[in-house]
Amino acid sequence: MLKLIRRIESRALILVIGISGALWGFFNLASEMGEGDTLALDRHILLALRSPANPAVPLGSRSFEEAMRDVTALGGVTVMVLVTVVGVLAFLMHGRRRHALVLAATVLLADISSEGLKVFYHRPRPELVPHGSYVYSASFPSGHSTLSAATYLTLAMLIASLEPNRATKAMVYLLAMVLVLAIGFSRVYLAVHWPSDVLAGWCLGGAWALAAWSVLLRIPGGKQALPSPPAD
Image (tube, rainbow, N blue to C red):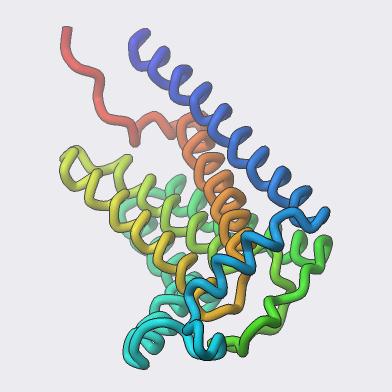
């Protein structure tokens, strides 16, 4: 029991450091963005993904461009709501009410924080080239990047906490990371976000995912999700 408590405390400390680092990254990016220091690199990366002859045309075939629209939809509000509802219902059906609550609360708080920060910073969307997807809100931070990081990483953490097989744990985390990175890339590729918007969204969403993990370790009964300590 003492070993398990020490493991929980050690993990909690690591998570606090991780959350602090993610938030530091977000606010540092916000400060740089506000001073205009990210604009040159943002423009360079965004234009690097466009045809030199015609910046209005993204690199790659039309089928790849359409695939990027499919990928970007995986981080949209509609899909995120569906994933969250299915995840919450699945956890409830298996008697994991704490897991269901952590997932629902994390996604909701990530969405609220993202929308609130968009209003606060009110950064315009890129206007260098036509947008490859419909947009209706401010640019910083990327809502798709924030929500996808918070949702998929939290869901992966919750599933992994119940899965004893290490290979399966690794696969779940890898799949979540691939989805998050692909969605972020698609936002820049479609020219609906600056790269710094996406990076800030990853920091914010990652902070919420780490906070969810910290909560799972600390809430009463949350330790039931941890693997059993090795026998002496």
